[in-house]
Image (cartoon, rainbow, N blue to C red):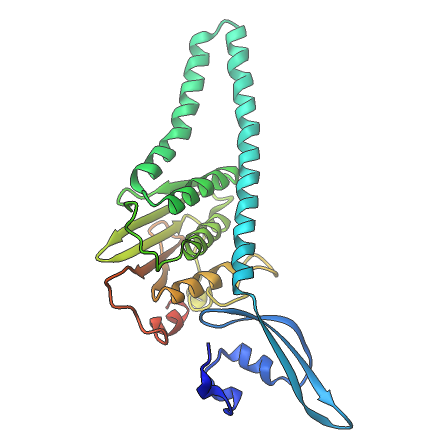
Length: 297
């Protein structure tokens, strides 16, 4: 994202994120380190040039933004596949139950059982399809609902949700929407899973030329001291190797000149609210966007 004015200037003066600046200036070798800027994911390698004394450093940077996005989509597809397999297994169990009830002469009970299961499965589908006309978001919500159900978490769509088909402009890539909403729901599932009455409430609506996406959960919430850290790459309460999803959310929101905020939800869990400007609204300057959302302060 640097222009020609960067040529000849010290790396420390380019305004890059501190971890990336440190990697570029490091004297020791770095191998395949992933770093995030406001809009991109880059992989950094450095190797000192020596000949009796250190003469400099060779640095290579590879852009992995698109690859990371594709990897995230692949992870989602795998999750959907696993959820569908689970649903198929449960459907077989229910079908066997219906057949057994009929064989036992309990026809009325068989009909009641089958009808109740159909109504339960159809209720959320009707709610999502009726409120969210944008097909990408509707498909994502239905897929995530299946995943949440597999993990013992109930996903609900807020009553005020409403997005008509064709409202979202082409300048707002579907991939970024999937990244934002998908990762927020995944984070909420991790937080709520295992709790009594585990729920995720999703809001999706267009208001005042803005797309508003909200996700709140019934988990333990985020400690006040961590509010500024949750979007930092590598931050996670789930152990090493995690903490990329929310960093990708902030990055995608920044690309869309939007904002993302974290607050305590009404049920004590975390509540994330994303606002993305639509066509016709003056975009936020690329260098501001809450200055990288100040980690969504």
